[in-house]
Image 1: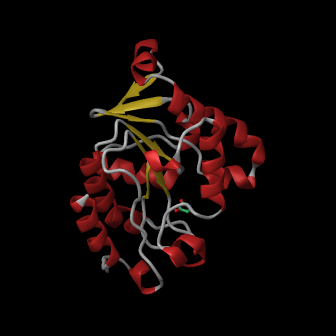
Image 2 (image 1 turned 180 degrees about the vertical axis):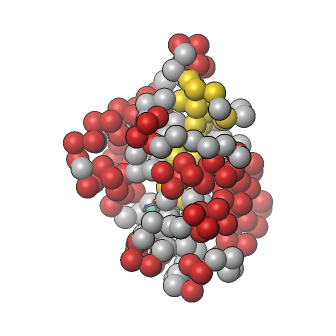
Length: 197
Ligand code: URA
């Protein structure tokens, strides 16, 4: 996947915002270049910054456990983040940081061309807004819905860290992912569960 490798080299040496001062590793997306599904998280945490891979800490383990219940291998999914460098103290990335880094996401989406995009949390959704030049509602207002943007099906979900903080929400998260990975987007479109932006 030369195009993704080139993109990753750019990300690894990026100094477009102040987050590069504190990073150990910039974290590139990971997965097949022709993946049907793309998960987008917020930004690397401590472990991801140490190792340089996305979603390997507690949030990643939650995603893995749900995928394995559904019989889906993580290796078949492209997993990336809205922001590629860990914000110090795991702060929420600023609007400027999200906007600057969204150019990388835009490039990644055009290379991988996934059919289904799963932004997890409001930072991922905001970044997608910059990618597509659209304003999305908040995740809490549209979780469970499918948004058709250009030719992509976008299924916003809560961020797994929010689920770990409030396990009562886990039912929405697992049911949401089950819907994403097991239902046919065309059928949902026909049923009118799809918002077009
Ligand atoms: N949280 C995220 O949003 N992304 C990661 O890669 C890890 C934790």
